[in-house]
Image (cartoon, rainbow over all chains, first blue to last red; front, side, top):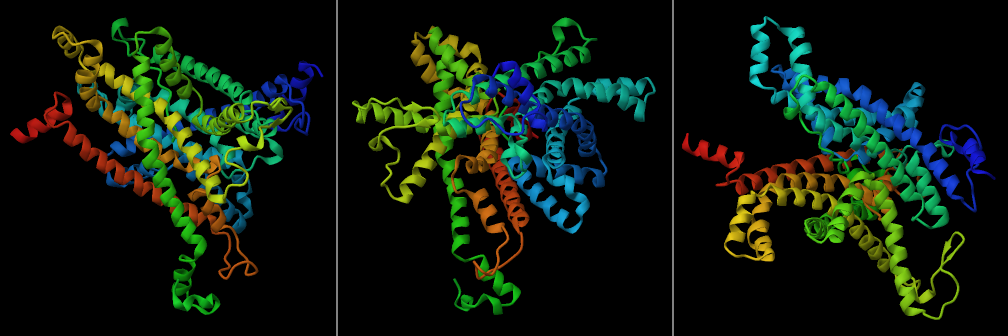
Length: 268
Length: 295
C-alpha cells in the first residue's frame, strides 16, 4: 500500500472519516506519521478554541481581580485560585464525572460528557484562569503616566480602557501570554488520558502515539514523531504570537521593543 | 475498624460513613497519599541534582558538553511533558533489561526485537518473574521517580542556568582578579550567590511538580487517582458490605481540595522562605524590607 493511499485512509481518521479499523500489525513509518498527524487536529482544535474564548474571559477576570468592588474581586480571585491551584488532570476527571452525574439527571447534558465539549470547557476555564493572572499582573504594572495622560486628554471609562489600558496591558503581558499559549497546546494532550473517552478510537496525537507504542512495544518511533509535530506547532505559535507582538509594539522605537523570550513551559 | 461495623446495613448515616471511610480499601487510598508525598520528597532533590548537572554542562566551555546540556533543556521543554512520561517509562525499562541481557546472557543469539515484541532472556527480566508483588510495585515506583527527575531536572536546569547568569558579572571578575581558578570561582563565588536569583523559579517549579503528581497514574502506579476511580465507582451489595452509587465525582472533588490546600500551604511557606533569603540582599525584595524597618 502506497503512502498516498495511507494518507487518504487515515488522514482524517481522528475525525471519524476514512478507514474504520486502525492498523493492527506491520506498522509502517508512513502510517504512524499519518495517524499521529491526524490526531494533531484535535490538539489544534482544543488549543485554538480554548485560547480564543479564554482570552476574553481572561480579560474579564483580570479586570474583576483588579476591581475595587468586592463582589467582582472575590469571585475572580477564587476562580483564579481554584484553577491555578489544582492539577489540570484532576480537573478533567472531576469535570467528566460531574457532567456524567448531570447527564443522569438531565439527558440534555449528553454532549458535555464527550471530549469535544466537556474537555474544551475545562481547558477554557483553565487557560482563562492562568491568562487572567498574567493580565492582572500586567494591569498592575501599567505606567502611571499613561493613565494620567489619558485623564489629561479627557478620556474616561470605556474610551480610556479601550484605547490606553487594554493595549498597554496586552503589550506588557504578551511574552508571558505566549508561554501560556504554548503551555496550553501541550496540556491538550492530557484530554484523552484523563476520563474523557476516545469514542471509536478518535483520539488526539498522543493517543495514537501511545497506541503504537503499546502495540509495537517500541517507544522510539512514535514519540519522536509526536515530538516533531509538537516542535513544529510550537514554532508556528511562536511565529504568530511574535507577529502580534510586533504589531502591538509598532509605535515604539526599535531599541525599546520588548524582546520576545521563548520560554515554553512546564506541566500544570 | 470499629466494633459496631460488623453489620453495616443496620447503621445510621454517620456511623455508616465512619465504618465506610475506615475499611481496608480506604486505608490503601490513604496510603497512596503517602506515596505521592514520598514521590515529591525523593523527586525534588534528585531533579535538583539533575538540573544542577544540566545547568553546569550548559555553561561548559567544551562545545559538545554545552550542546548536550542545552539540548537537554530545550528538548524536554519543547514537547508535552506527558509524552515524556509515557516515553521514559517504557524506554528506561527496556534500556535496563537490554543492558542486563547483554551482561547476563551473552550467548543468546535471537534478536531482541522480534516484530512487535521485546524479548530478553528470563534472567534479564526486571523485576524477575519469580519475585514477589512488592518488588514489582517498588520497581514501578522507582521508574516513575527517575522519569519525573529527568523531566523536572530539565526545568530545574533552565531555572538554575538563568540564576547562574543573573549573578553580577563583576563578582566573577573580582574572583578572577584574586587569582581563583575557574573551578574555584564557580564553587566559591557563583554557586553560593545564585540561589536567591533561582529561588522564585524553583518555587514555581515546586508548585508545578506538586500539580504533576497525579500523572503517576499514567505511569502505572496505584496512586490517589487510581484509588479514587476504584473506590468511587458504583458498588453493588454483591461484592461489598458498603453498596453505593457512582461517587467518583465526590472522590475527585476531595482530591481537588487536597491539591488546593497543598499548593496553598506551599505558597505560604515559600513566601516565608523568600522573605528570609532576601533579608539584607541587594534586590528589590531586600530593599523593601530595609525601608519597612526604617519606617
